[in-house]
Length: 301
Ligand code: GLV
Image (cartoon, rainbow, N blue to C red; front, top):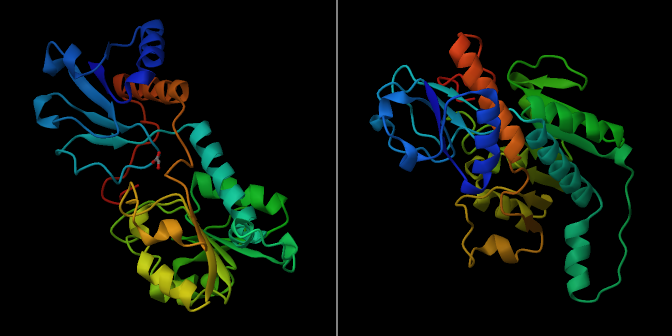
């Protein structure tokens, strides 16, 4: 019963040390596999050929998302990495992006490129309504931080369950969109959420709204975004995710002054936090205890 490490080599020494200290069996990459039957779990972003491992019980995504993984063989569990660092990093990126759109930074960056000193009216954060799609662990953290900055925050959740922020249920989606001056997408990518940021959704936002997207590229219909920007209905967008990734050099998004793109860097799993989570997962697997970060594979998150 061992974990096969199949991720960024730079993380290996940290994982190896932690597993050795805990006395937990660890295989440092596929080249180190002597008996494939020993592998019960694989930690990876891109998985190896899973059919090589007859006793595989679990695949652990080394990130927060799992949408990039193929359907797993029957009986193989799927877990994602729960790490406070991932959540804090995404929060930081989203708060930064929200402030950048709130304070018209795409406009000022564009003006600066021309050496143009021109002011625009400044709005109070309390007058800016922010809507968060995806009120999981990260959404909750983002909501709290933006509330602390004074923004008028609401969340959209499938269940509409109450939290520390006003929540809209799926059936109230139109009302939620109509009050989102800044729309933040933190949804997982599932068959239901694919393409959710489309022409119809964007049209329901208030005039002049901005989009902050740290979900997955395939949530967004980029042509619909362009049309909404061209029509003056949306003012700007900050994207950390695109479809495809990497975004090709010649793609129009790069040169559109109304859009700021970062190359999917909102979060990077800290090596030690990732290793700690993997260790907890392996210990739970051994003890038959609940697996932290277990994914409902039918639901997709
Ligand atoms: C990054 O997007 C992740 O899923 O960790």
